[in-house]
Length: 169
Image 1: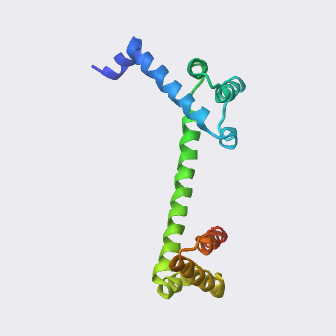
Image 2: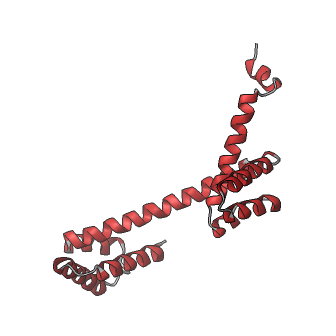
Image 3: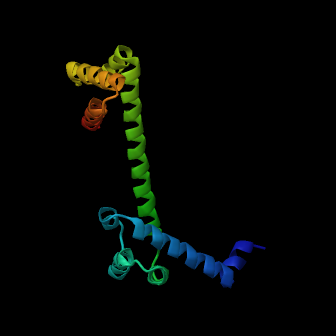
């Protein structure tokens, strides 16, 4: 016997329906937490978009909870997969961006601690980099660190590394 066809023909249990509704409501919570720019990239029907925007403005806990339930109800009327995929894509981009920033921080830290050896590696991988400007930023950041001054040059070094990375991409 084929159990999968038996399971498909049987109606979902009340517990499973509740779990599905809760999952859609959690998806709605994810939508409410997005910024306006992020929300625009997600394919949402007009009614759902309005409900999400309204939920953002609610401060009362009970009103917010009820609005989330309404968002879940609206989501039950449509296919949530495109929304899930768009959210996953967005989260993937955010993770890639965070990883890129971490790599840049590691480069900055290496440049400040290792000096010329790390600088030679960086220049080998980024031949268009301004050698003198990098050296000057590194020296200034090291002096600021040694004297306990605010890390202005370290920030400028990070900014320069970010610009280099963006030009290379």
